[in-house]
Length: 221
Ligand SMILES: C[S@@+](CC[C@H](N)C(=O)[O-])C[C@H]1O[C@@H](n2cnc3c(N)ncnc32)[C@H](O)[C@@H]1O
Image 1 (cartoon, protein in one colour):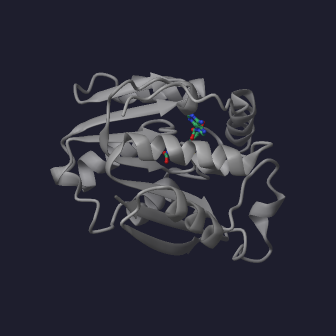
Image 2: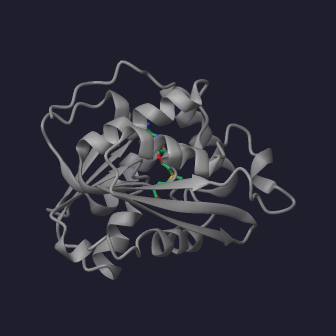
C-alpha cells in the first residue's frame, strides 16, 4: 500500500509549543521529566515478547525526540536493524542528529508524521512513545489518523504509549498540565480493534513517580 500525505493537518505549532514549554520547565530531557524516567519508560514499553528486537530489520519511531530510544534499543535490546525516527520539534531533532546522526543504521527525519510521505516503505515495528500525549482540537480524529498511518506502515506491530484518563494518581498532577492529552484507554483500544487488522492486543498499565498512570498498548498484526 502506498502512503500519501494525510489530508488531516494537525496543528504542528501547538505540538512544538507544548514541548518548548516542557523544555523550559524540565530542561531538555527527551520530553520526559528526567533521563532516568525516560529510560524507565523505554524498559517497560519494549519488553513484550512480540517485540523480538534482535530479529527486526526496521523500526519507525513516531515522535523520536532526541533519539534516545534508538540508543536504548541498541544497548539493551540487541537491536541491529535500521532505525528511522521522525520528529517535529526542531531542538529535539537536532539533538538526535548530533548524538546519533553518524550511526550508519539511522535515519532522522525532521517533520510532522501525518504530513510526511513514506512512499511504499514499511517497517517491522512502529513505536509512539508520547506522540499521542499533546492535545489537538479534534483529538479523536487526530488519534484515528495517526493510527491509520501507523498501521499502514507496519508489518508486524505497533506500540502506543498513552496517559490514563481514569487512573490518574492523586493529586492528579497530569490533568493540570496545559495541553496534555489523557486517554480513555479501553475506548481507544476498542476503536483501534474495530478499524484496523489487529490479531492481538497486549496492554501493560503502569505507574511512575512523580505520580502518573499510563499504559503501553501493543497491537500485533
Ligand atoms: C514525550 S516525547 C518522547 C520522545 C521520544 N519518543 C522518547 O521517548 O524519547 C514525544 C515526542 O513526539 C513528538 N511528536 C508529537 N507529535 C508528533 C507528530 N505528529 N509528528 C512528529 N513528531 C511528533 C514531540 O515533538 C515529542 O518530541
